Amino acid sequence: MIDGELLKILACPACKADVTEEGEKIVCSQCGRRYPVRDGIPIMLVDEAELPEKKG
View 1 (cartoon, rainbow, N blue to C red):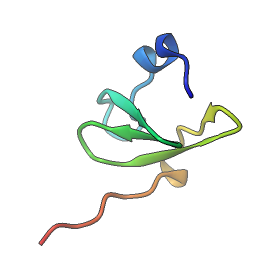
View 2: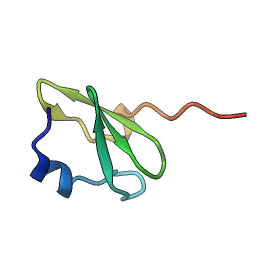
View 3: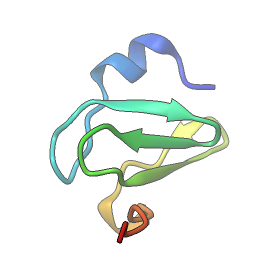
């Protein structure tokens, strides 16, 4: 679980949008990238992110 104050200042490194915590991932509210959390530390690297599934 990520500290609420830390979550408030985090932003997606790809598009600079706000992020939320969903389980063991930090999820971008705009582009949908999912960043892993390892040992309680968010890994906010674009290369580590999972891309959202394509709809269609």
